[in-house]
Amino acid sequence: MEAKTGGRGGQPHGPPLHKGPIIEAGVTECDQIAAEMKVQKYTVSRLAKKAIDAGWLRKRGRNYELVNPGDEGEKNGKKKVKK
Image (cartoon, rainbow, N blue to C red; front, top):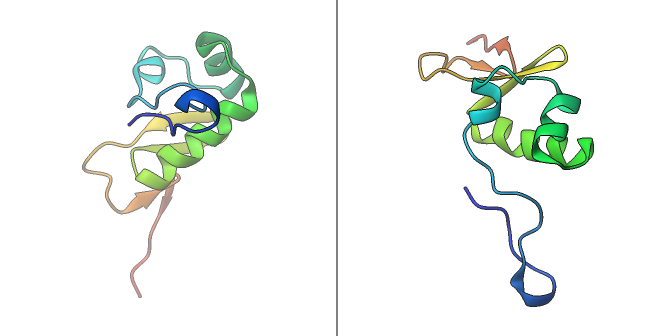
């Protein structure tokens, strides 16, 4: 998924979203991810929110982790209970 374009010249607003190569490498905390991506922590938080909403990332405590395809009943580390 690519970052949205806008502003002058259609330049992207931040780095593209990729499904987790940094997290797969073991870098899971916001400040560590920000350092790896060379962006501010708030940028990581905004991108992570989009990834969580898309269903392929969740947050557990201070760490982000990829959602496995078999974890369909979970969102953001919490099991959904059917009523």
